[in-house]
Image (cartoon, rainbow, N blue to C red; front, top):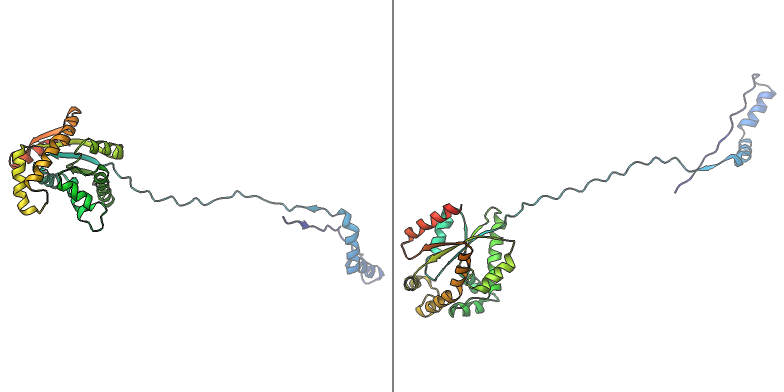
Length: 270
């Protein structure tokens, strides 16, 4: 803290009216001489007081930090589960729904097959063995792939929050895993159920297998898949039906006839 020393001197004595005489010289020697001034300062020393300088405080004004740029809030995903036996036409109808209503189609099976083919995938061999045997891939793998696909889609366009999830959930474990991971993070609007006769499904898949190159489009794998569907997936559909969330379509008819029914459902659901 700084301190200032103020020297206070009395006013000078009046200069004599008569100039040029002895009185004038005496006045000058007493008032103007350095020695006399020094003596006068010493004589006034007791009267000197150390005073803190007057400090005028101004309120501190802090520049407010720049407000962070507001990030657009991501809308919550709206999901339609698309279920049905192998060969029921889920993928064909989903492609039409995407074209007409702007949904994003996520096939759990396609995501798993793509992950199986991805170089360096730690799940590749495991997924391959499960698919070939007609078994259901562990839920942690499937949900992580679905969640990543939804996040990537919405990161590119936050308004694209409507998803068709095809072939999921396939069993109770899938459903519990979804509820645990996505509870409060996604809304399931309804379940679109394509109901189709098993023999019709097998026939369609065998025909598809001639050009699809899928390792599971053969009769042995198809019979296992249908058995798994009836044993594990159908109870999930029945559970959602009790909740009033199943929209059932007869998938044994032609592609156009099936889609007409699908359009009625989506127009009604909004």
